[in-house]
Image (cartoon, rainbow, N blue to C red):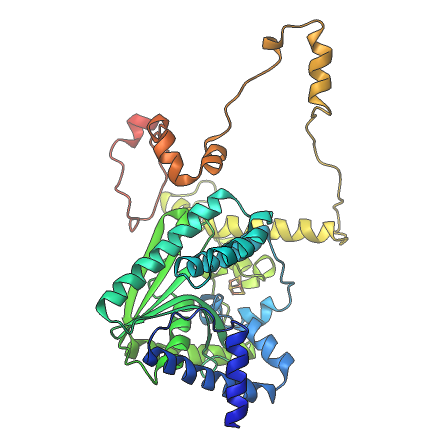
Length: 434
Ligand code: SF4
């Protein structure tokens, strides 16, 4: 048995499955040994179970979808009915994560410059790579290095784990995940997550995904480290946002036992009540979700006091639901259109060719013909590319140095935000923007 485990440990190390641990002392080495020992035991246990079952369960209750299945327990089983499609955003995000990992490894001197130039080549050739990705991913790498350097100043036993697989299956059926970067030092575990999208800022406060990662990471290290606090950090470089939040390990474990375990059981069984909220945003069942439809249409079905005109409070009621309604309508439209493209016939509708815009077939040939009778200044426009395009060309950091003083950023148009919004209230909106 021991010989078998030793062999597996050697294979793992050779296969670089654990190649990113930054370990320099015996305590860390012992930690890695114990963690791998545990991993092998878990792997052997799981091999006795159905592989399909565990793969399905993993996809069913993922850490990234935790806020959804915790708040709306039937959502996980409902989402199973819809295809899992990769989008250009998810492909780009995956590439950015791999690129961050490679660059961090290079900066920590875990690979040689020669190895780096070989490994980076496929990234540079990838269709989703851009100089912007280089700049943005570096912000994440800088943050991890900065935190790890600070941790090492506090204790020489500081540990950085990159792309660490975590297991929280004691709470969630098939509960596994991968943390981008974990730092352990002086009783604190920091779980750092890179989010490459630029849609909305995601707060680390009470973030279910990171809390589950933290529980998994604590399980793997509890034998050797006495951790009392977890710090959850989300880095969104393209939105210039780094959000951090701390909680005690006791509170985290309490949440795990009292909330996660209970909700995960219901979610796995597909039981409970459908509850709408922010977590519906990326739900695959969104377009066909009855709860979301009922809530969106509830406003329209409402019996208003005046049969002819809405009062201010009634208008406000409609306005409060406008985000929910428009997001639901968008997903219904997208679903119907996509399934029509895939061959579904919707009663009363047909696919037709939309409007198109004329475009030149051969610009050089056009110029050649016009040159005979017209002055080129009358038909050739020299136009500067857009700000975003030039920023991508020169890189974000260089852009500010090179062109920052030539950019004007006018005041944004007024927008109606909830009282809780951090931006100050506009005093003279009427005069300035009327
Ligand atoms: S869209 Fe429906 S099923 Fe999905 S999370 Fe929202 S309420 Fe639940």
